Image (cartoon, rainbow, N blue to C red; front, side, top):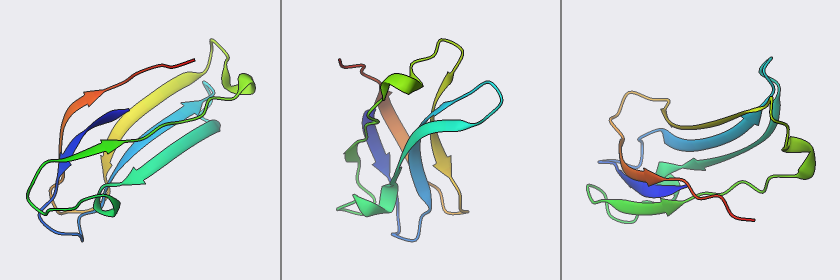
Amino acid sequence: LEGYSKISTLEALGSYVISIETPGGEIKGYAVQEVAGYTKNLGSWTPFKISLDVKKEMLNPEYVLKIYAWNHGKIPVIFDDISLTFEK
């Protein structure tokens, strides 16, 4: 998963999340990256890249792949140009 984000302060609480879950909501694997952790210039678009190493036991056609940007604060976090790539 890659794209760009922009924040105005390092106190912004935004994250990118990738998870694989059962239909009942049990998490089989996940990766989280905090936006403030890789932002170099406040107020500018900053590229990011996050990946999840998918284990064989996570490959079930009933499982759900979730990909989302999560703002768990009140300060705006802007996300753009998000793309997803699957690699073997």
